[in-house]
Length: 459
Image (cartoon, rainbow, N blue to C red; front, side, top):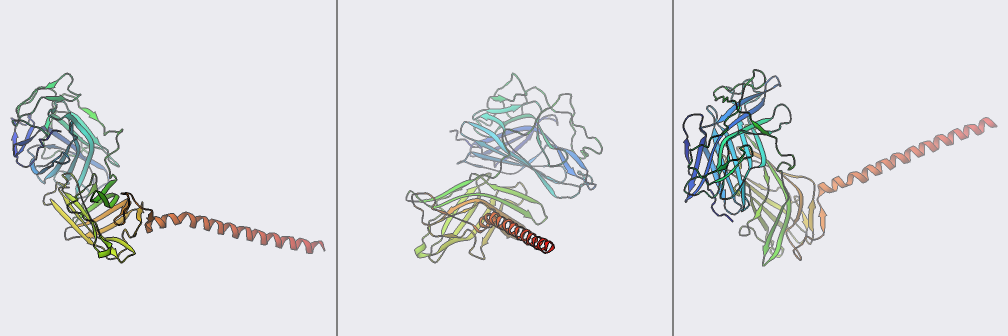
């Protein structure tokens, strides 16, 4: 497996030539380097005060690096850029490698509604656009290049899509040698081309730019930003339809001791964080990994709690710690949960956000000894700090923290929320039967009354 991972911390931001040249970003630490060179133009939709939809064209140029990082154990690399002439906007690129190929796993834009740019915007909050998809797939050891315009779209619930157009791009987040782009692969929009190894700052000839016009009343304004116009048409790719967007996935977490499981948990986790200005962002717990050194098995005879400590996130820096406490010899429950989100947003000052929740009752994930818990319904845990509030959503939970035999879950008991759902059907059936009995009884009484009257009349 390729081992040279570009830890993106040192910055050399070089602008090549005039505005027609793409911006180069070079990051080096301990002899490891990442290179990226590109032009990037965004068409950002927004809602106006009259409920119509406008849009603004922004060019990502002269960007500064806000934060960067990497994870050796999962071959992740993250690059966060900050750009804008007035208020700063952020773009976060997450790259991933499987040992043979690398690709852009996700790109997230956080755009501030600056009133000088977003005329008549309904609010001045930040808006986040996320594109999950395997972009720019290339063999490790090579670079990716694309001179032509490639536009990706992020569909919106209503109104216009969010468009991002890449051009004059060279990319190599892993295995850079001598601070130069390796030979590599051109995109399909550059037919018949191969990419020789190049020194950063040189540009291969080819298509560059796209025509972007702003029409009053439909696409807003580009005040303070550069409008690029050439005669080359753009190539548009819609978000993949064969692969669903990346969403929360089931995590299977096991704490082991002497080669056997002492804690087993399957869980889907999503965390919705709200800033004090009202803006929100959502983090999903995907590909979580148990830190065995920070986890521990419990001991019910000595009332020692069981602890499950897992890491996850874009740079594997976020953590979730769950403590399961013993209640006598009857059951155990989730006593404390600590969530630390590290490097999950590109907003300045949000490097580490921690929520520590001590449960005020022993009902959360309560499990009888000798059994496991199964809870398909959503369990929500809330917490609030000075600057943030969080709603932690857990569902599709299967849990056993004590008395595990043969490394498998014991017989499952249902959580109260699932029991409430499962009771709806028998209650509905019972109500229907009661109504049916009443209808039959009323019909019988009416029929009997009519037959009695008929007897009197015959006499």
